[in-house]
Length: 180
Image 1 (cartoon, helix red, strand yellow):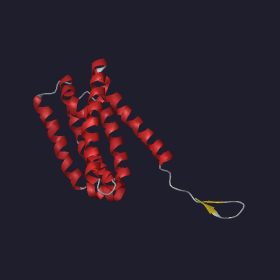
Image 2 (cartoon, rainbow, N blue to C red):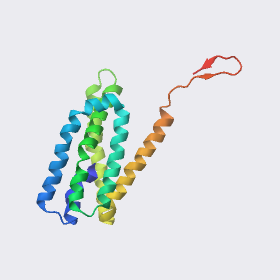
Image 3 (tube, one colour):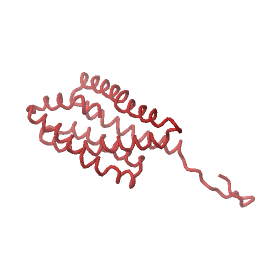
Image 4 (tube, rainbow, N blue to C red):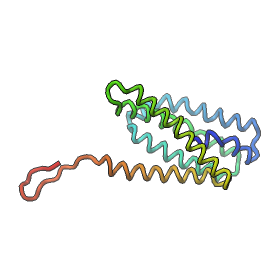
């Protein structure tokens, strides 16, 4: 998201967008947050924090790739509609997850760590990587970033599956007893 937040206007300028279009792009993304935040509690109940995170990462990756593929300024305005869902999903899921995993008496610290990671460390690293990509190949920055997010999603799913496997019940062939 730092790639989008930090370089969208530079990208729009490279497409020949006017300042009005740049302002509209920001307005569209901001307004798209309203319904997304309004319904985020329902999404959280239906999908859980994990499901929301997966959806948000997939949409962010695809959103970045769409930016890379477009040459029309007006298409960027349509892509900006995805912002509300991605931001609302990541933020709501992160806040909920941080609250769930926080030890007793550490909820505020857990929230601070989540926000520091998302809005601090993550934004700094994302912005730095985007700057390097923009310098080397401006046209490919969004495509590279999108591919990186999608690869990160795949790694997350693979690691999560290995690390957080639910306990399985297996019958022992000799005794018929159940081991966990």
